[in-house]
Image 1 (tube, helix red, strand yellow):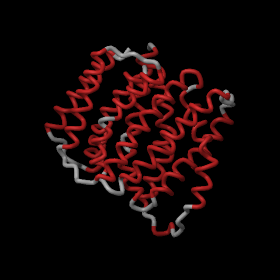
Image 2 (tube, rainbow, N blue to C red):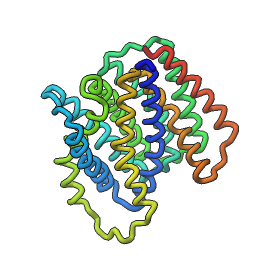
Image 3 (cartoon, rainbow, N blue to C red):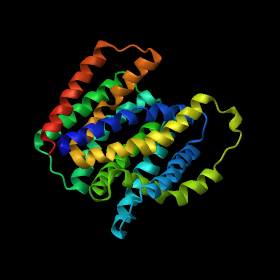
Length: 287
């Protein structure tokens, strides 16, 4: 298996894991304050990352790696979780899909800027079409007038694209799981004190679904998913593999259909096939 194919497979696994992040966050913010949720979902995997780095005897990052790691931490450990948690107080997880459709473009643009990639013009055509299909499909479900929620989601998409691209660039030398682990550790001096300070107490009223949602965003969204995602971006190309994010809403729909018995309409299937075509086209012209 060549590096590019291995990267696409790793990226796909990462996207499948990330597909449950926004729905889980939506469930979690019903029980936990968004600021506390952001802090604890960085603190718990940060502590686990210390153990992982120690067990694997990972070398410490170089001095010149610290600033890129700070960008990763700002983008994907703090920025995206905080902004999405705040946004999901005002909008539903389904409405947030509109903005997820813009994430591949954001990642690709930062990949060009920070990663030095130069995709062919045809790549951008497939990327724009795919993003428009996802955003249009999500908008067809209805987007309520929630300017605060929409602005927060837009900010989340921008800062997440930067975090993805910077982490993928750094993964080329530091390694995928090491990047997210060190970024989480770098965030601990902030996330741990905030977790204690913002601790609301009264956990006996928290329901099982809320605890499961918290566990998911802590373990899968913040650690395990990034191990696969950064490896995929590093091996297959930031701009190209980043287009797999176009499939994230549809994996979410498939999950809802499988677990909740929700109906999958013919329109969903048609749009999904069209998006897959765009992803294949982007893969072809991504490098």
